[in-house]
View 1: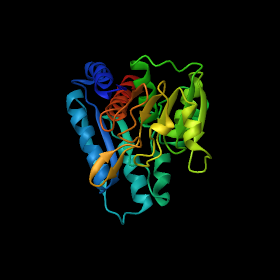
View 2 (view 1 turned 30 degrees about the vertical axis):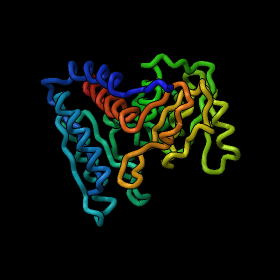
View 3 (view 1 turned 45 degrees about the vertical axis):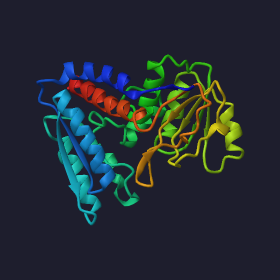
View 4 (view 1 turned 180 degrees about the horizontal axis):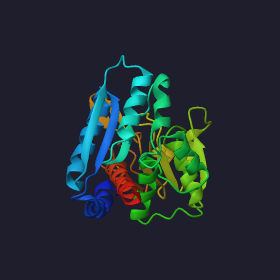
Length: 268
């Protein structure tokens, strides 16, 4: 039976350290996004974590007809606040609004959205790293999964897959990135020591994709028939270990965001 890579024990350890550093401080997270149910749900979950860490959350929900310039102005105003320890903008944004990411001060860019922050990642230079890819690596570390010399297969070449591939390379893993045009996807995945799915396709990964030795990390967050599910099918049980959805990467992602806020506060 597969070992469950639960995110809560890992996240709790991170939050314990963050809370010690931010409790009683004048610290605030500024979030900007549209009045979208999924984004509002995410901000709500961040607010619950923030309360435990002593961080205020100032959320702005924009009308769907707002101009790109208005969003950019909101971002600049948020970055100018003296209590800001993080500025988070909804992602992915429609193309017309994406210039707003460039206005996030890199010292407050706790989810690595500014192109300059992404450049630092590509150059393996100091700076914040995107929360979800960081959470994947931290979760594997927490459960003692070795990455150096291992074959990591990532399904998805978007906002999670690309930076995660770089982070895995920096840990001396051998990395294969798969996508919708990959031929014989299941066969490629079976060669993995660690398989990460971040493609947003419900129940794509089945027992056909894994072996008894595969460690699976499910980064998918999908809504199928009114229920939250990942990219990995519920009957994928042959692998050695797997992170569930919900309850796997998600809690660690939020913890990493707050850890980055602590770093931003300390840098001030």
